Image 1 (tube, helix red, strand yellow):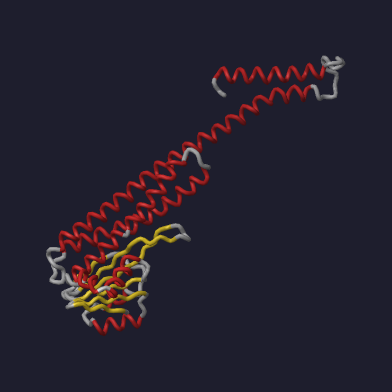
Image 2 (image 1 turned 90 degrees about the horizontal axis):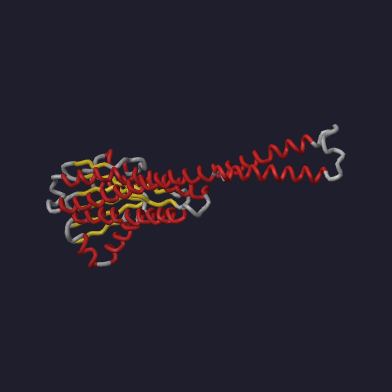
Length: 303
């Protein structure tokens, strides 16, 4: 647990909370509800906003890229906002929040900029920077989609199918993480509490617009990925049909040739059996049959 005090504002930042940290918070802020403190040790909380007479308790989630599983996972942030204090609890994986706290801790000008405007202004700044952190992830997804669009007609279908499947799974995860945050910000926009300054309504409205834009981008990505998947399936089916068509033609051409060779392979007396050049005659007959069939297929437009 670390604390920054500037003027009348106190910012307490807790990373990787332990039961001891929760107990210390309970002693420093006895007004915190026990259920809210219990939530700090849970990692399955849904985004929410709880209003109390003396403080606001907010739970939000933001995407964090997992390079091993190749999917965005939710990273939770817990925020207690009072009239003159802000408590943030997280797992130290969200860079904007970590960098903001370190900057305020080390730089007097930064403390005056972010904490000098009051606890509610600092609360807004933390959420705003975390929301902005979503867009580089979305732009990376957009770049991956464009790369697939460029290579979909040239690359191996199996690799493309795998890449699209990874992206679709990640897009679903992003939608599940980002969409619920819009409701939380809408609630903050309507909060009528002394710890939230009235002029911040417009700022929270701006955050809501940014989140809605992020949701729209995610939904657009989902539609594009579905279209790319359908296009790839169509291409794969077309290529499969081409292969089956060629194999079918080869099989049909070989059928009469197999019949001729089978008939003249029988151990019985056959026409031309005693002819000296019967072998070459049968070979020419087979070539003529195959050529005639191929010419007929070509004429019908089958090959």
